[in-house]
Length: 452
Image (cartoon, rainbow, N blue to C red):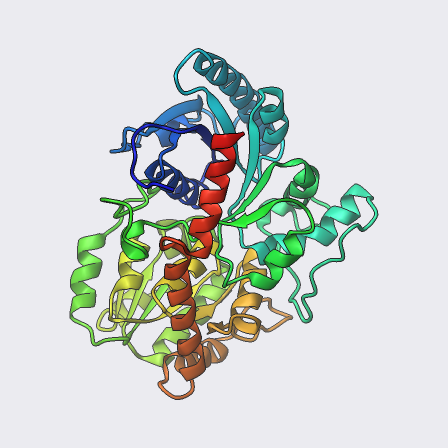
């Protein structure tokens, strides 16, 4: 496949759901397709598209829903918002695809966020190839399969992937504390039409989740095409690809970099729980005490809504050791030589980004897929530790967190963990290099579109 050419060989419409963790990986995949000669229309909500500047003539942005004056607090709550979103997307994409039919680059494929499973029916209605893009780890989505069997009442065609000792999946507040809630049913519904999709695209790399990918191959044409991160941090093949291009919050990059530059190599604990996760006040308290006990430098990216839960005087008492910021460029921080450990909520993007830079992790999952990711991080990939939990209180105690940090940052006790992170760092880079596993899969996907 010739890279960087401008005579577009096929036109792909990319449809993410809202949220930074949904938009950024799909935008990165779009950049890679454009680099390889495809025309991309990135179809997203107005709040996203109005902030986008492509810098690439092969990528255009198309608004599918005006969410600037419409949110989850509107009529009908979450369900009402989702219904309005679906109706708008269907109408907008029908018009877009029909308008493109008479151009030199008619749409050929819809790459849709797997959480929007209904988009496959729309793709088929419009005569497009339907490619489901899975943002969560293969491992996490595999954990939902038993729920699908339960809710659908279907007979088991494929045996669930074995996960011995998997902790009970925590539930977000929005799930109402029940595995029969609409949230869990919506997550499990990704399996409803999975076998009808023309392609299943996985935001991972073969060397990381090989066993689970083999399990997935029983459903459909599955290809690992990740990790989807800015090229400058991994394979350096895409010109000027230095950041994702979309941030919900403004990062304090200068303050973070200046502070890190003054610290010794691998001496800093970086803490972040992502853009969406909300931590129990009791867990935050235990974490603050663990950082006090460890008594080494820490950088904590914490949203104001979470910072309000911090114990009184914590910031003042730790000002000589710690830096707290509203938000930061996580890739820049993890790439810095001063960072030696990442305390994470175990979101898929955070784990992958940490592996790309060979940074060991301490996992404090909050709910659902994060629990599965933390389990695989420790038990399968062996790149970090999930501190033991007080089952009665549902939190990890300070002593367990402090011990986990100590182990992963210790030269001897954390040796195996560090070696594994460095090995998977190398595998991630090779996967996206020319001829690597993910690069080949992307070329295979493109060839199918071009010649179909």
